[in-house]
Amino acid sequence: MTKILVTGALGQIGTELAGELAARYGKSSVLISDVRKPQSFAGELEFVGLDVTNPDAIGSIIAEHGITDIFHMAAILSASGEKNPALAYRVNSDGTFNILEEARKAGVRKVMIPSTIGVFGAETPRINTPDITVLRPTTMYGITKVNAELLALYYRDRYALDVRGLRFPGIISYLTPPSAGTTDYAVDIFYHAVQGKDYQCYLKKDTALPMMYMPDALHSLVKLFEAKGDKLRHCLEYNVSAYSFTPEEIYGEIREVYPEFRITYEPDFRQKIAETWPASLDSHFAREDWGFAPEYDLKHTVQDMIQNLRKILVHQ
Image (tube, rainbow, N blue to C red; front, side, top):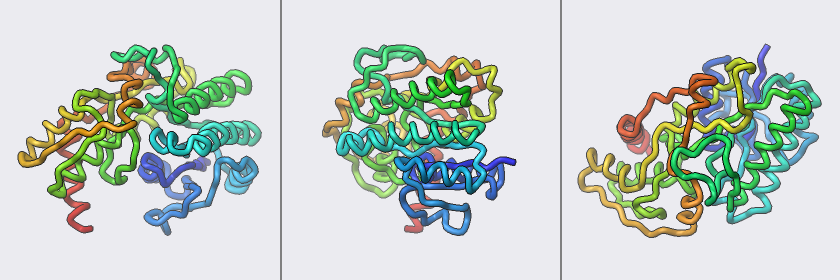
């Protein structure tokens, strides 16, 4: 029997991941949790409130619900982490340690923990960044995610806990509204275009970053979750990316649909963060070890985003 706990289930990825897992394994096999109360999931998936900085609460939930596997999605992201670094440390570092330790004590089968391109820094090669390289981030988000990668390795080697993860690039999605993340311009720009509004971008027009469409991100997590353990060379260090683009390049694609759409550039503090991140990733280990194979290129991402956002925004 499978019973999957999803932490941070009301976040950008967690919201859609919960639905993906329920469709694949059944609604009764998924328990969603978050420090906030749900709205859209009410009556659909079983929910329990959880603050991952509380290890006793984690242990109780694992025991009471017979949790067999965990997708640990709870995290404070880059821009929010810079506004409140103490909270980012507690949630991202203490929270990850708590999840790993309680999973170890309870004999949980697998723990999935996403990492991020935020682990890289200015000393990291920016083009085709390899999986194993220099990790010297300058944000609290990046620092805590390096810590998570090392903790996962420790628990795998010391306790034989099956911990797996991948380094996500920027994620594009039409279901979750943009927040203030460094790569969220690639979502916000669509909202403006579809609503007939011009867009002011907080990054320079030539700032290239690796990205991925949400369906490919979800499929990648599930594919890694289901992969045979003896085929995996890495723990949380798998780079994944579908494509890289600059704000000017995605603007050009959107203008194919909205010729009157206009963009201006006013870089803020997020520009400095972006300049420490890779422009492109080497994902060959993910392809070889567990069959990573994104389906969406940039053009198809743009087309699908616009098509779906039109439907959503019309009903608002």
